[in-house]
Length: 229
Length: 236
Image (cartoon, rainbow over all chains, first blue to last red; front, side):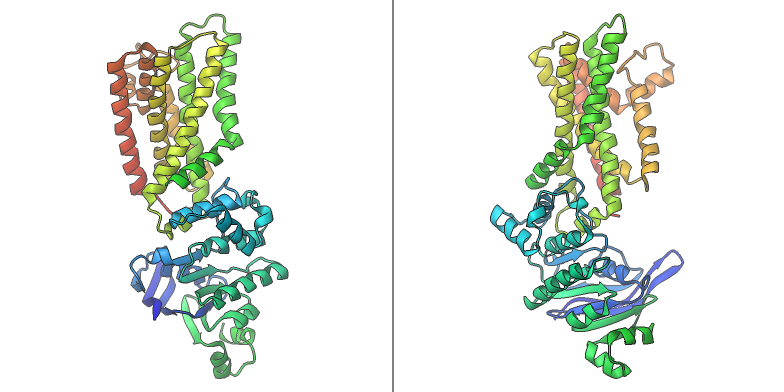
């Protein structure tokens, strides 16, 4: 089953066409990695798929009418409500999804994302790694069917990257459908079932990592990236 | 909605900016008038004027900058992809901010009364609260609209000043406009800040007909602000 199916999608900002005839589908249970150089259109694609950005042309079909209740999103900037602590942000987002987060559930969530010690800290004062963990905690609050993460490990040190990677693998293990954008080819190799290469708003290759490597006669995704881009 | 309201109220109450801008500055104003001017007549009107400015500044200025900052951070984009309807978010946060504005207004009144060794009746005090609430909620909701007009803090400052300064100066919060040119008097009649001041003055004089006219005008202004806020809201 396709959770999201985008057909012939284009997006222009004034004269500049940033997305050119994109056909993307997010299959239930799969982990899809969106990769490409800076400015390739990854964040715009995510915005289009979520309905945050209206397309210039093309269609996007979501698997259910109230898909917002079943999707969790981490945006690249990991924004949080200003002046709110870590636990207040979790409680606030929980209320957006009509979830009652009692103390037990709240502490479970904080523990699961290694945020218990900083629960009373202003969320905007956290380190980048902590903010990313909080963003993913917010993303998964309502146990969504689909999780979309825009560069979840960008700007993190190797230890923090590993923590996020482990979290993604845990979500994958639970059977969640995941779409994430990344520049880290090792991460993509470890996590993704399907890889979509995007360049200048166009898909230049997509498929299972092993199939792509075989088809292009390369050993690893980084080599394929340099070959394609 | 209840959770959004309580959490917003909690965070606004511990905002140190609130203390400085909305309570301390008006109190400094009261101190200056009380101790540096020889004769102050009608101190209740003066306190009313200063409280009015404080409520306007907190409800409108502080909220406008806060909303702009949230928008620039991308918080509203996240809100957009949740099932939370926009109107519920605006109403809940506006209520919380209006309550905070009322509390800061009440603090200034109490300090002002102590300073001028004046007193108000319980009836006047009770009549003040709904006027504060309606004015504060109108200005908070209006700030959602106004913050959509600005792209940066610099623009926000300009737009906010363009709106608040004429509102204050075209009112009789601190001086009478009886001998002002006809055009100024006409503008005063359609000034939402004047409706707020009229409500406060009517509460002081316990003039109920004037009080309810001000309340009706403020309700109309709140509804108009709501339509503008919902119609123009920008998620990013």
